[in-house]
Every structure is written in structure tokens, then in C-alpha cells.
Length: 221
Image 1 (cartoon, helix red, strand yellow):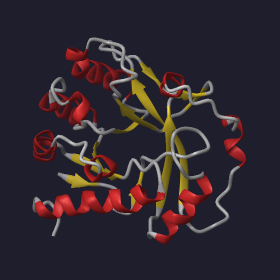
Image 2 (cartoon, rainbow, N blue to C red):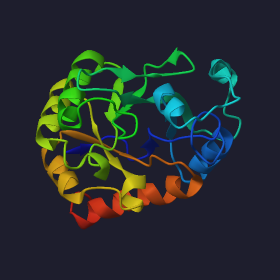
Image 3 (spheres, helix red, strand yellow):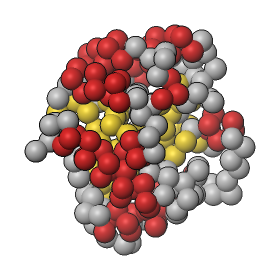
């Protein structure tokens, strides 16, 4: 197993575009204080925003005008794409703007397919969109713990060379099935440590929770 982003965080959320509690500028400033080299703001897809009636005044098309004036952190803007059904359909846009930098996740309140076939949905999405998917988001989350077949999902991710996520916020907030996570870590070729931060506390403590867990399990010295 290889951890490919120890000083980079590729899954976080902002107040500007989804359900984060801090602005893009606040997240980037704090990422610099934490010593991160790179931060990806991957706000929730339009399917999730619509489900939760999160109407934002910020126009996503203006995102190209934002520049980091705070520090040397490299900032990327992506989307936490939603798996929609077992056919592998996904929602990968915010306000109609697609992204080629995707965290692919399944959320129980957005997924509309047969729950028992969520693994099939992941696999079909990987077949179609692997070139755009940077990481599989929180595959060991408790809300699909009875349905996801982690061995099959890891096999597909390994085949398409897509990393799987160790989700810091879920570990911090006890929303991870540790049995599934243990299996994933033994089978995955590449993993990412991401905060899935929705606030500054999770950006710092979520990453630390993931690192602590990996040390406890002897995956890190």
C-alpha cells in the first residue's frame, strides 16, 4: 500500500459553494499554517446541493478569478461527484460547470439506485470516468457499510489505478467502519489521506486522526 499525498489534501468543502463552514480564503490560509503543499476544494455536486436545498449566491463560473494571495499553497477546484445509481451514472457538476478533478462518493441521501448494488455502481462509474476520478471518497463510511463489497471495489480501483480514501473527518467523527477500512488498507495499491474538512477543525484534526490510525495499525512509523 502506498500513501500518495501526505502533504496534500484533495477533499474539502467551502462555505462558498456547499456545506462547509469556512470560506475558500479561510481554508487556504489555514492549510498554509498546517504546512500543506496543496489543497483541493471539492464542493458537493449539484445533486447533493439540490437534495439539501443549498442555494448559493456565489456563481461558480467566477471561480477562475480567484487567486491565492495568502501563501504558497497550490489550490485546485474540483467536485465531490455523486454516484447516482447502480448503472454508474454520476453528477459531476456545480451550477452546470463540470470538473475533471473528481472525488467520487456515494451518499445515502443522494444515491437513488438499488442500495444492494452500490458496489456495481462504483465499478461501472470507474469504467466510464476513471480518467477524471482522483480518488474514491469515503468507501468505508458507515452509511453503506452493509452494502459495499470492499474487496470488489478495491480490485476495480486497483485495475483503473484510482486511489481509495482514508477519510479523516469520518474517523474523527466515528463514521468509519473500521473493519472495512482494515480490509481496504490490506488490499489497496494506492490510498490518499484526505480530511473531507467542512471546517478548520476538521482540516487539522481529521488529517491527524487518519495519521494516528495508520500509526496505530503499523502502516506508518
